[in-house]
Amino acid sequence: MISFREVTKIFPGGQRAVDDLSMDIYRGRITVFVGPSGCGKTTSLRMINRMIDPSSGTITVDGRDVGAEPAAQLRRSMGYVMQSAGLLPHRTVLDNIATVPRLNGVDRRGARARAGELLETVGLDPELARRYPAQLSGGQQQRVGVARALAADPPVLLMDEPFSAVDPVVRDELQEELLRLQRELAKTIVFVTHDIDEATIIGDKVAVFAVGGRLAQFATPEEILRAPANDFVASFVGRDRGFRHLSFTEPSGLTIHPVDPTVLSAATEDVAPGWRLVVDDDGRPAGWLGPDQRPAGDRFTAADLIPGGSLYRQGHSLRAALDSALSSPAGIGVAVDEAGIVRGVLRPTEVVEVIERDRAGLQARVASGEPVARG
Ligand SMILES: Nc1ncnc2c1ncn2[C@@H]1O[C@H](COP(=O)(O)OP(=O)(O)OP(=O)(O)O)[C@@H](O)[C@H]1O
Image 1 (cartoon, rainbow, N blue to C red):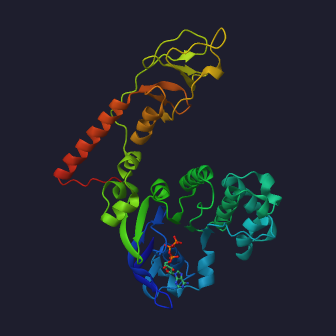
Image 2 (tube, rainbow, N blue to C red):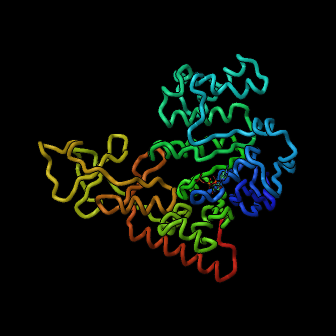
Image 3 (cartoon, rainbow, N blue to C red):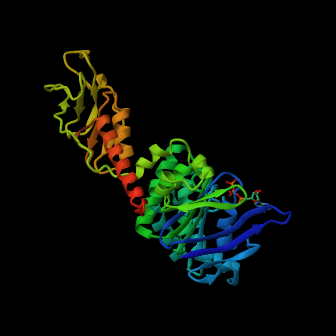
């Protein structure tokens, strides 16, 4: 566990970057520091490995005061990933990753072998090992940065806006990859971002910082979206927090209606008024045929299909269910199983009924004084 106790940082010149921070960061979890620019997230992160020393207060890791540890040794015992990946430009990808084990006394061969394994761990093609950082995409560079931070197998990983310089699609992939890695590795990760969406997706706990370096709320993502501690947190998490909160709500009681989808050119039956759902030979959704749609030739072809909305994977959140129902051109969501095969459809009104029931359940729990947040 990493503990902050009454930690304050005032920079020379009088800038109060962090103000009286006390918090406990649990081992094996992802804790996210989020907040607007300049509110002390990076300073707080860097005080953990003594890149910055606090003006007052103490930080301990598993009970040991970091202030008493030699800074260089401490830094090597914690992986650090930053926005620009921070790779050495004149070293190959493999040598970049091997740098830390080499510093820790592993021989060249051993360090390179470990680097090769790590490339795979972070989902990179081993072919990239001989390239130089400039010959990689931004997303690939970030993966190398993560591999390098993991190279010494440190229990703690500090990540400062690691995914903010890549485009949104790559960013989603990197977030998923980090969650997959974390399920395997169970590191203690402290992750800085200014994006509340990223914070709620990847954080087990989220610390919302306010201007002036004060901790405004420290709770699970679900609690922060459901019950912001004050007006600052409420405005920071945004007006659509109710919708985003549905990401954490289980779809218990949601009805998925069985359907008999159409295989192209076979007999057809309406799934929604006038709309026919078309699947491929394996039963995966291929698209829709709209009302009064006639084939261009003798029969329908894939080119006639209207693309569907998002799919709802059974068991996923109410947000995913509502999104599939609202984004479908037919006004009815398509539910698929883990293999992507159509299992049925769901109606928006019924998803909303489940949301209403969830809300009523929450109000009843609040009225009875039961704790409302899970996790
Ligand atoms: N070395 C420094 N000297 C003086 N002031 C600093 C120094 N580093 C940071 N600050 C100030 O401390 C405050 C907190 O900075 P910090 O980088 O921790 O914020 P942040 O929340 O990480 O912001 P961002 O999201 O923009 O990176 C800011 O007002 C910043 O200008």
